[in-house]
Image 1 (cartoon, rainbow, N blue to C red):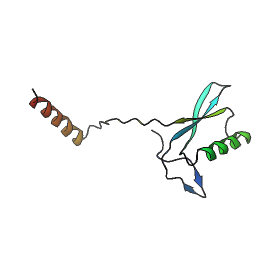
Image 2: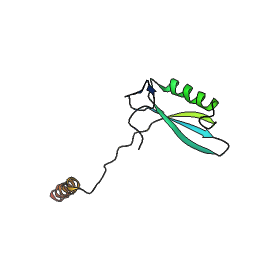
Image 3: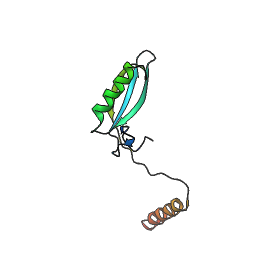
Image 4: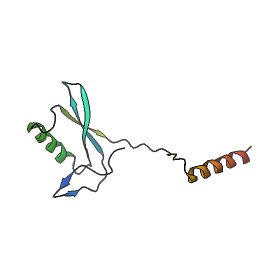
Length: 99
């Protein structure tokens, strides 16, 4: 799971837009890749510049900063509650009437 909002914050106000890009650092010395933030299209360039400045100040590790598109995956989450049991029963009834 990723946060529902862009990582951009200005004067204590967080951007309400959903993220469109995952911002990662490719640390070639340790051959690690890790996420450092999320960006909407409005704040993509600002956040990239901010992270570059943080690298120059040694606040975050050096390495190539990459942006990749967020890929949305939808699943039917089964929690095992009463609603799930009813849905399974209804699907079974629907399947048995088709026979």
